[in-house]
Amino acid sequence: MYPSVKMKKFSNFSTRVTYISFTLLFSFFNLDAETVAQTSKNINKFAIDSLDEKNYKNENGNIFLYGIQTNGSDTNQGKLACAKVASIVLKKAKALDRIVLAVRNIEDQFKNWKKIDKEEDLKPGDIVIWVNRYSGRNDKKCTGNGNCHVGIFTDKGYFHNDPILKSPSFNGVSLLGFYFKNAYRPK
Image 1 (spheres, rainbow, N blue to C red):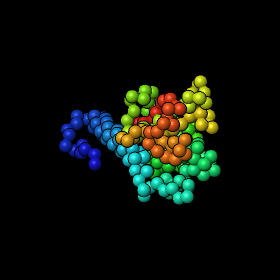
Image 2 (spheres, helix red, strand yellow):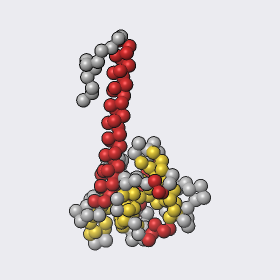
Image 3 (cartoon, one colour):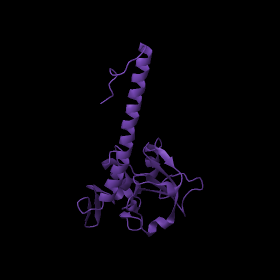
Image 4 (cartoon, rainbow, N blue to C red):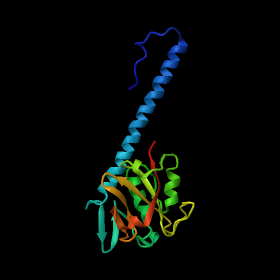
């Protein structure tokens, strides 16, 4: 897995230790880069696949995404389900360890990821935060009750819970009610 040090001739012990340290350090960075790329791919894939008939079910008005109901009383019957829908996908992609119900919780979970400040810089797998044009705060802080919105940028566009349809979807007219705040990407 790691390059062999025996092939190299070193003038002293200190040089050998330095070589081994840098070799191991760069090997870990390469593994991390692969993990980061795979995390983004997984998020993109699970978001795209979420609306396939095996992953999305509408049973008498009860909507299930990967087996978890999205429009129950915990989300005001789906009107405030964006964080839950996004976190279901993020948990499935192993980027999150639990389901959350608030945009601010999503932001807290990913504050150590790379922050993307321009919408044109988005890549598939990025977690996108929007601010409500009508009820959003001037400081753009996400405090609840629909003043912010969260989704995932994918190869098919924006995956999110549509607050008008009260259901997971791609793109849609409801996004016109929001403006881009920022996004987060694995780093």
